[in-house]
Image 1 (cartoon, one colour):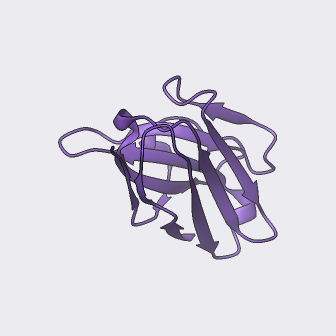
Image 2: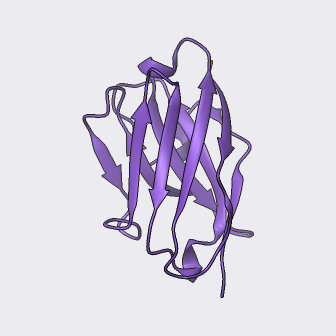
Length: 124
């Protein structure tokens, strides 16, 4: 099991940037694929990005491709989401999640452990 704590959310203007962090505790972090998801009220949780155990395989949702970058530092038990060129529609609660696989996927049900979420608000 992995305990996850997100940070770095906040209020930003359109076109701005934020960097989210997800700190993990537990010995299994380096064996888990890590994903970022987001959710807005009344909608299902949406896949954002996923990174494999060793960082060699990365996938993004089409809506964030070219603007967001996922990365991980296994020595620090942390996964990051760099978000650039933010748009109004990026407003959501962002969650990190851990999947017990080498390479994760876009389905929330593949992930065993979730953080509590961090709010990102893009507004002028």
